[in-house]
Image 1 (cartoon, rainbow, N blue to C red):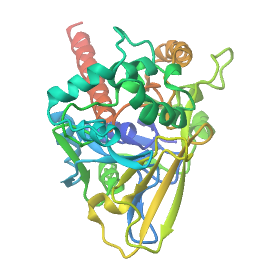
Image 2: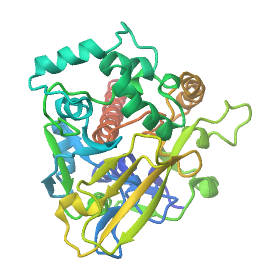
Image 3: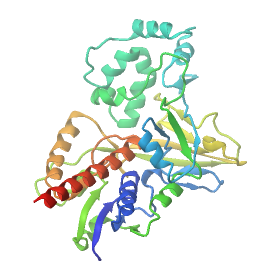
Image 4: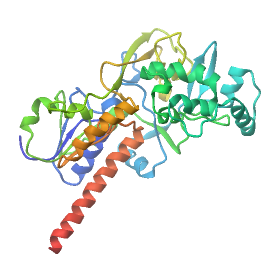
Amino acid sequence: MKKIDILIIGAGISGATLAERYASAGKKVLVIEKRDHIAGNCYDEYDENGILVSKYGAHLFHTNDEEVWKYVNRFSEWYPWEHRVIARVDDKTVPIPVNIRTVNILFDQNLETEEEMQTWLAENRIPFERAKNGEEAVLNRVGPVLYEKMFKHYTKKQWDKFPEELHASVLERIPVRYNHDDRYFSDRYQALPKGGYTQMFEKMLDHPNITVLLNTDYFDIKDQLEDFGKLFYTGPVDRFFEFKDRMPEKLEYRSINFVTEHLDQEYFQENSVVNYPGQDVDFTRIVEYKHFGNQKSPKTSIVKEYTVDEGEPYYPVPNEKNQRIYKEYKKHADQLKDIYFVGRLANYKYFNMDQAFKNALDLFATLETEKCEDHEKLTVL
């Protein structure tokens, strides 16, 4: 193959952002993607009912970061979307995150003010000065009854681990509201791209300096790709090193089995996303994509999500054992020259969408700054 300035493995958020930045800076970029499409897990397409659906689960963009918001607006128009989630708990339907209305419905209360909500939580929570795991994190915030009804079994289905087996940070990510705000996110910018995410990634990668190879596994052709300047890897970090001797054991990931049903009815449920935190069903949630963007069709499509061990890796499993294993891989990664590990799987860390964009933008800026500083030093010498 011809000389490549920048080699990128993966055409998701991290890979596409770095490809666009380097191509705009005049570098020749090759992006290798093992799937048959770009956009990574953000990939969406129109189904047989004419509904725009996401192949790998709903992706809701939200951010407070001005730089990221300006960046994504370069490649798509966006329409406001304040995401709301409801849950079936016992025989009731309640909003998530937990807020005043959630407590009123589940416990037949009549709370109205933030002070009343804070008082109720204070009377029901089990305080921990510093939560050691996910269970303590939830008990510290909402107490044992809400923990049992809404968090314990949902977490088990999601991670195949109970909250006490996970880092406190996993459950601390879930907000609890003291008011009536039932939005899932509270960021300043909450929106979805008009026409979907795939068209946005097409624009990001539409540059004469970018070549994209689909249906190509990097590990099948890596011996042919020795002549490049920098390599950015966005896949699972342990996959990169698996051909080396004496490497740590494999990391744990969770995958999702998406079961789609096309229904001859206008709507299936009253909301885009309905969670099922109880033990009565095996799936974690049902997504009805027709609600996003108020799409019109006489029929509808729903997707039930079952979180599983086997399949495409989606989520790192954050516990002490995996963090120890990851640190060993990171030691090896840090020793490599001009090879960078970017994104959720490569850093074994959960990123929201805006964080993934920000991480890639910051890495590009850092490397370009270092290059300029090195050039200045050489000029002085």
